[in-house]
Image (cartoon, rainbow, N blue to C red; front, top):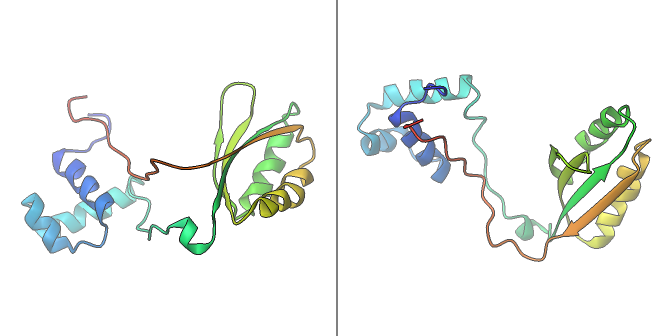
Length: 157
C-alpha cells in the first residue's frame, strides 16, 4: 500500500478528525487497541507528517471575520512569484494560497471583517507586489459546506 497506513490507522485518523480531544484510552476501547500502541501510532503519524497538529476549529464569523473571498491573481513575469509569496506569507488575512492551472497563477482564500478591509488588503498587500498584473475577486455569499476533514484513500487501493 502506497501510504503505509492500515485499517487501524485509517480509523484512528477518522476519529481524531472528529474530535482530537478524546482520551487515548477511549480511542483504544473504540478501536480495540491498547492506549500505548495508539500513542505510538499517533507519534508515527505526526513524524510522517500525516498529522500536522491538533487545532481548535474557530468559527470565523463569531470572531468578527464575516467576509470570505476568493482572489485570483495573475502575472506574466516569473520573478513576481517569489515577491507575491513573500507578501502573502506576512498577511494573516490569507488562509490559503493555491498554485493553479488556467489563466491565473494563484487562488487565495482570504477572510476579513468588511469589504473596506478587503480594499485595504489590496492596497497594503497586493498592490505592493511588483509585477502583479491582475486580480479577480469572488465574494462568498454563503458556505453550505466547509470542512477540514481529509478522507485517506480506501484500503483497497
